[in-house]
Amino acid sequence: MARYDVLRAWFQTPNGKPCIFYLREGTNDWNTANSCLGDNDEYQLRGRRIEGLALDIGGYLGSVAIPLLIDNPNATVICVEPITENLDLIARNAKVNGVSSRLTLIPGAVGKSGDRVSIAYRFEGGENELHHAFVGNANTVQADAVPHQTVTYPALGIRDLIGDRDVEWAKIDAEGGEWSFLASGGLAQIATIVGEFHPTVLPDGAMGSQARLRALLEPTHAVTFTGPDEGPGGFTANRR
Image 1 (cartoon, rainbow, N blue to C red):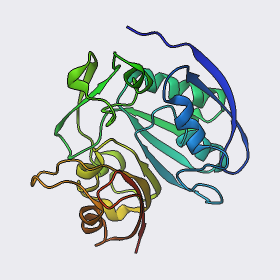
Image 2: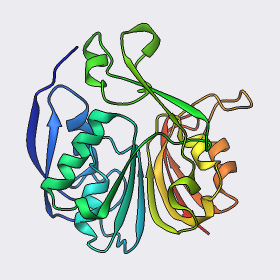
Image 3: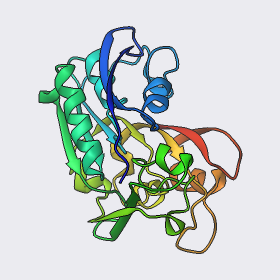
């Protein structure tokens, strides 16, 4: 099994505050952190004020949840992540940045409540597989074709995470798990959702697309998209 050296790197939050992240050398960690932090701000957190509860679905190394907490001292975050090594890294990064007390880490996977969800990770093989080793169900890797590990969870829906509470802001990057999670009930309790959608095969056999996501979200949210109609791409949904 490949071993990864851990580096300590300095960044800035989207609002310009210093933060520290531990990253695994030779993996997607640096790309993910760099895309979320500083001026790149993939999830549009610069200038946003969050006073209550936020969700981070697909926490990876904490590069969304942790800067959000640094920039918003009254906010709390529920972060869901299926891979143990990632959960350990999120906890380490939260501690070094002094935000552990406001971060709830949940080992698990999202979807339709109670369904069984399997996550492939720790891919072995070439450079692409090793680079994406800790991206669960990475859509750039043919998991069945390479050695890998798998973890399985009962899926968590929206209300499994938040009950009857409102959520000010949510990010989701779940490599296809977004479809069943967003359809799980409780969508109207989330004010703003920012994330990625993937061209996953849906229960009716159709492929996920901008049109399908719009149909799912627009009864409660106004939606804008980036990327091609067929995906993968980004979306922002603001409650009406």
